[in-house]
Image 1: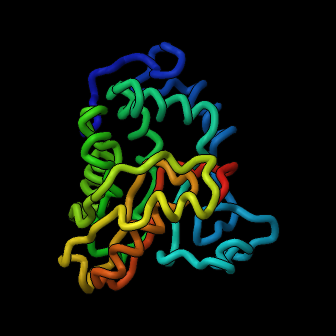
Image 2: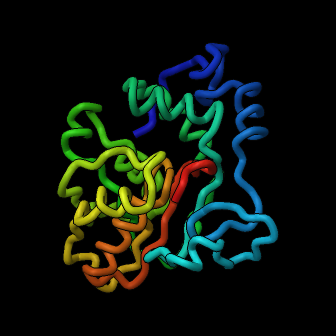
Length: 227
């Protein structure tokens, strides 16, 4: 649940009713808005037609059929998310709500929302699972059930900066999907898609469990990560 009790901008400290003051919100829209046709992996590409795949996805098509993302993981959004996940500043959720409030359900056919889970050790260390909290908020707004179909069966290293072979080894058998995925259209939710490797592994597990279709929604997309 997002909190309604703060009265200061979480970035600059100015008075703000929505977690972000008008100045910081405009700066974020200027620097972090993700626009233009996106590949299935949520990366933009020069001359990319809607629905087309980038070169790397042509070589290795993702096991999900689409991605939805409105923001670039860069300054100042990266400051917000790092303070949220790594410093435990739950007041940042008020600002994140502002960023998601205007986003409609991108896939009306979706049966349910499934958060991309953190390993229990990371969840214990942070005290919460940010993807789960985000999914619950989106589920209320979009009137879709949130069903935790995935379990992270082992801890993995962060994917940013890793090469392809290392990412594959790191995420091999990292997720297990519940049998209730069978026949369902699943919208997989995460806060940041960095390399896309975790979303691929999670979507693959859901597909192996019988999911009819998997699409990915992420709050932000890292543009400089090697996939």
